[in-house]
Length: 364
Image 1 (cartoon, rainbow, N blue to C red):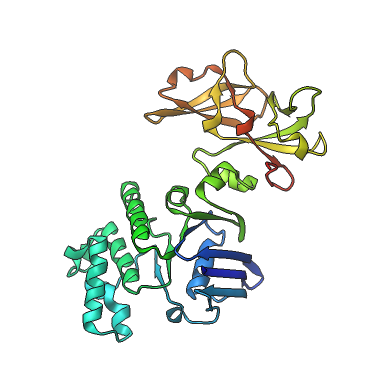
Image 2: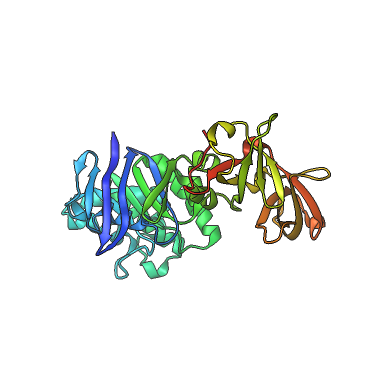
């Protein structure tokens, strides 16, 4: 059974369409991340699920019940905001229990739920403090605790870690993963941070300009990007994307010809390309490039070496005038390659090929 369903959902502000005909089913107990750049429609989608934005078109169902026209308090959801949204004049226990007290729940029940949530989040020692006495990470735990005590059908998170420093974000990611494992609640999480998406999600929904580009597991969107946008967006550093055309050969699988280079084509490509002159884009992840002996398909002049401890990001350019820069990941300290001419190669089966006009992947 789906914990959350969005059927043909759209959102318009006047003549501007922010979300277009969105269809998505989130399974009960699943952790789904809505990922995309600022302004892509992911937060608007979350706010429509929460009832904080009206739906221009379509239907939203939670636990099989149509909630499209219901107010937020009647949807059986709990939301955690980017700015924590804690009441400054209340202590932690009062912040966590406010919604339950407002609903008239018995005092003993409220205390028990607050105590249980505080234990799960390791904030039992903070219950008498006010928000101004807490660190950013502690405030976020309180905000999450306030959501937990309500025992909703769906948890909604709107960029909850964006106000934390890098070290604390890493710690809180682990905490959220453990929390979801304990509670097994349907969760929809919005972020622009692909590290959060890749480490937390059962499935990732990638947005661009109000449309879903791809839905898949972290492994699927990384290893088999459906569009050029997904290929460029997912992965750090980003995928190398080079304009090419397919050239058939009597023997072999054909070639991908670009400005100043030729790459052997993947074995599956010939059957997918109808015309040799069709403009294509080949995608190669930096991690798939390796140093070749002698002259290779990609002969680079190395411009920048970024040493990261266990590996280096090597950035260079091809000999062809105006050619795009290419990034390769090399193990260890690669500063000896700086300003040198270095040949790189890649296994054709590690390459991704896209139609240049539609942006769609050609990989079967």
